[in-house]
Length: 200
Image (tube, helix red, strand yellow):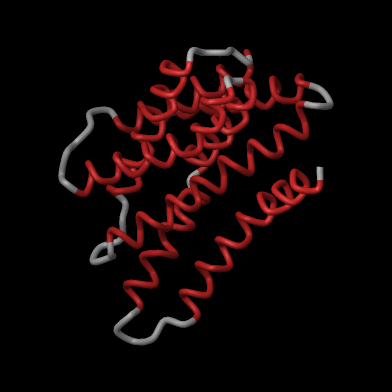
């Protein structure tokens, strides 16, 4: 029991620790090193300021709670892998058609999956998580600051992706024990946001 509480406590502190780590990188930047530090901090904060990215990761983290043990454990890592591959494609100059529409659709579908608390086979659920975050990662890679280190930018947004997904799962676990309707309402709200993004 103590170990479980310790893990939950650590997960709650992870997002704050990552932000502080990024901030410290900027604080110690000196002339000639600002691009490197800025790349990491930019990657670290980028998912936090894009509401579509944030909603997709939160929905996926919450949805994963009701999946098989294997898929639940793999979800944060599949999300991070999707982001990495998507960003890599963008940096390599590989264009994905309709990325903005795909991002809106991923938010909508992730919200619907959460609202219905649908359980999917591991292969299908894992593929969807990877595909959803791949388009988000492509957008991140496209928006990477000029002259920034790709590896540092990648490290920053990968850490934030893991932190958000894990934190959402931890919060959802606490909420779900009380009333699963809260998760359904959250899913409905996220799906509505995705629909609004698609129509805008």
